[in-house]
Picture 1: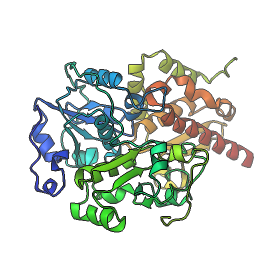
Picture 2 (picture 1 turned 180 degrees about the horizontal axis):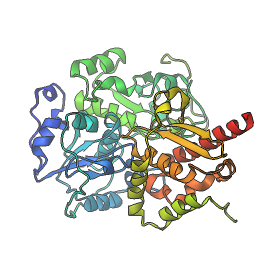
Picture 3 (picture 1 turned 30 degrees about the vertical axis):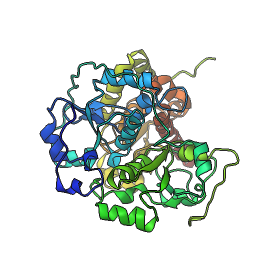
Picture 4 (picture 1 turned 90 degrees about the vertical axis):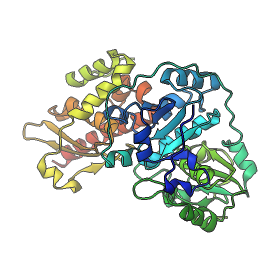
Length: 294
Length: 147
């Protein structure tokens, strides 16, 4: 059973207010049956140091990715993961995490590939919940195993592969990495590991809109007007556009995918999760290294 | 292929991780994160003396010292919200602090892969741990050659 939507006025401005919840709403609904809170972090141990009471942990790297092929779980393994985590197919799932919800948005996007209906993000993520002094616990959640079915993953509507991007050249592309990664000066994010890209730069024609521009200082999303000025104004996108977003492995671009799809109501946004760690290593794909879109 | 022998404390830690069930390895890493001692005041007040380790996903800073008895001392600083990074730092602090220069330099670079953490932490996150050891060893090497 899906939970009621968060009626907070800040959320009402967005195209799909039902996709976000505030910390206050979550605190009030924590014990509701039908709700599962999922923490997804960059740091794999952060959950163990304390988490929102009842929240289950889903790790992007060790749980959502196939450990052999560079791909996500298939429907059978995703179903098994959901059953083990105690997440039912009709559950309302609220994601939150560190780093302004990068990995929470990424997990939400991966869950979307499996057509899970009610997926929401906690506006402001883990940092806001903690900053407000809300309860945290190290107690392991007790959730009963569910009967989550094996559902076919449906990538096409929201996921782009390398060849899709090649066919998309000339259409709107948003590069959400930092300006130095976009220009080719850096092969990776400042202060992050070099993940092995052999070439620096960006996909030809991409517009640079660093993901963080969509977030306020406290990690919450900017207002709808600000987001429209950013993506519609500066980046020149229109809600009916066919848009592909990318970063280095698809996590920061999941955050942007969420903003475009759920907050602004764009209907054709795909996340290219191969991103720069694939494109920057691919033989004979075109690359640009200037700072202006081509 | 024979593996390079490890200093006793490090060998014990590697063994502890390798013989723990996967589920317990994260808990163990968390204990090392919690056991990482705070920086001594002289370093806490002078962060410029610490070297950043950019290979770690979260900010990590390292400083080293060799005392009159040729013993190595290592100092790490990482934010509380980065427990994995703190855990690696805690392991190396427990394993290396107080060893001789020779012993620290002899630690093989592949030691982190022997810890059986890769499958629970992921290879990408393990890179930071290897980089951390490499920084410590480079600093010590520079210190010794400058002396």
